[in-house]
Length: 100
Image (cartoon, rainbow, N blue to C red; front, top):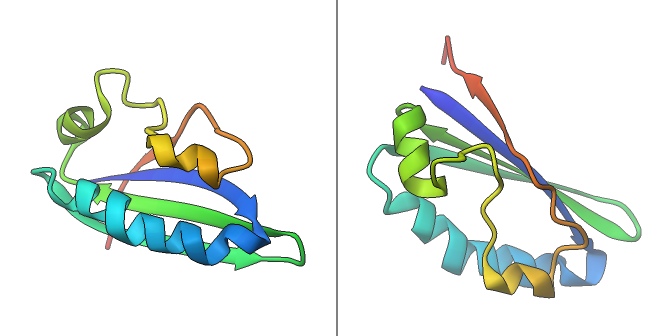
């Protein structure tokens, strides 16, 4: 299995809206992809920003390519992300899961 890790940041005032957006739009999109196993959406805040880390787990790299495209290391964004995110990291990281 492969873990795909993305990190992002919003202004603190967008925290709840972005969480709702991810629950309604993004998480169902991930979940409907064959070979998707699970996800963990993490957050941390300070006075000004909300920091997110999204860890998705997939059966293999081919499955990730079905979700993200052939250049699977490029982050996938939704048009609505421009309403919330402060920056748009270009790449995600992948790790092989050797124990769970």
